[in-house]
Image 1: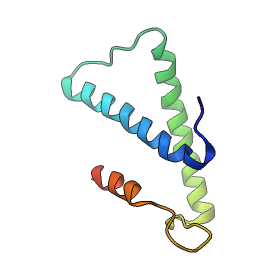
Image 2: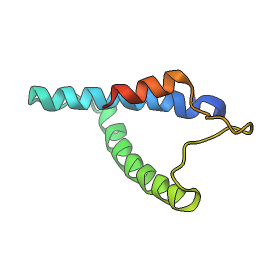
Image 3: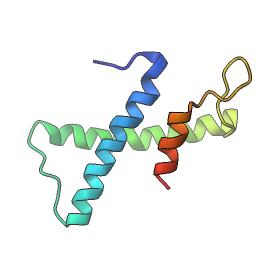
Image 4: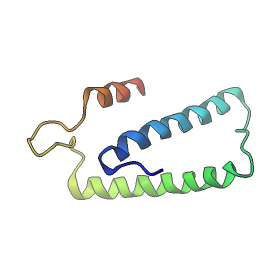
Length: 90
């Protein structure tokens, strides 16, 4: 089921982090992912989509800048949970 527009980025970021962790674990273990015939095409599709996403994000930053997103009240649109999750990546 697709994410609702008000939480699409939050939900997708969590799912991408899960996939990233699985890939990193496979690399650390020196073993390829054990993907079945059903999952392999989605793995390939995700690689392409991530490349497309990076290109779109670069265009977005060129057009709008890379300033932190703000809501209509001028405050940061990032919640404390999002800030904490980003810090875990460092």
